[in-house]
Image 1 (cartoon, rainbow, N blue to C red):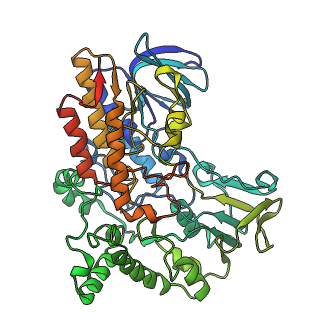
Image 2 (cartoon, rainbow, N blue to C red):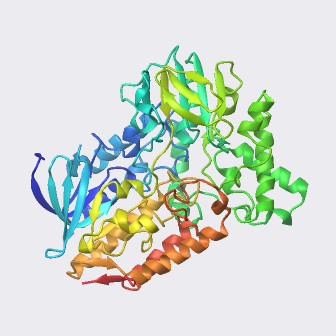
Image 3 (cartoon, rainbow, N blue to C red):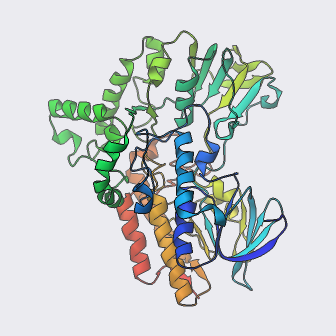
Length: 537
């Protein structure tokens, strides 16, 4: 598509990850003209950008794949938790099967979208000057689309190499023999630390709060084993939409203190041995709302972690005696040998709660204890402006010219986590007030499929009935917001001081915390009642 071209299409999707591809496939089957604008150079969404050392998904297969039989029937994974290279191969396979790329325009970075009331269409502009006029705009940008780099004094003065994990060079980076500092110990930080520690001369980890990481229990997979399991895949993919977390297992149907200490210990050990998120999800039903029960779960985790660490000071930093927040209130990561890394002589852990970063210097990082940590490379594993940042980085203007960034500045307002009043014919997936991250498995693709089906059916309903405009009602938004805030107030998630579950600009629950199955019931009820809560014209 030449730069500056003006085109019209029924539907424009922004983003070619799981959500965008799924929605394109189903809308195209209905005969509509659909295009995807993708900022990256190829398919894959976050997996096109994430190529840092150790990057992999932390939801096991077959949960982490499309539920379409025409895709899973002939595909074979090599690992229980695939890395980014295999996920890219998977998207190539998806394209071969579904012919997706023909309707995607790559290297198109959307910068502005304006709703034009006279035509009831969106005017969408890309950075290169391309303009599109779709009837419907569907944002499949993802919850983690805008990388966050802290505003540190002197950051531009550093004379070494620095990269954010989300903007890692495709050709890689030779870190052998280098003095490397990494800021952040979230999912990407944990993965990078595990991967590079053996190669670098010195690794200095700057930690704000400890990651309550859980053992991944990675394993190789073979074709014969997967082929035998595929008879169950239809049931597995259906069941994941019927559970709270989109996984194959639910919270254990007992409250913690309704059991004996020996019963609890055996249950903890069993879930711990299974690995992945079993210990968090398939634990007792009240650990997310009962602080005393949560403390029991934390203490078991703490003791398991401390067994793997040699230095008492490091034990206290990584698994503190007093938990800094409830277990599960911030997203845990999955690890393979994360804690053993800190027993290495070339690895140093800096607790930023004890000694914060004062500034970045030409030669490294100066902390509040007046120590300059000499570095050749700084890695920012500092995450994203999550949930809303991907949407608000686009200058989106609805009725009356109001921007979505301004609308959400004082608090999030959506209807069903799918649309927002004043922005007609616009839908979003993996966004605020949906179950995108109300569980720890934010990467699981159940939400895009549930939301994608709803959006596809809504657009089909409008096209069939010759309707041109759908706009969320403000009263319906207020009621959905009330439900989201109420569910968030019950959960221990609200006790975390900082968490993207709660947002940062306005501290409030960003997620629908009522469970995936209840979310789907709620949005289907609206559709079945003729899209009550929306104005259709």
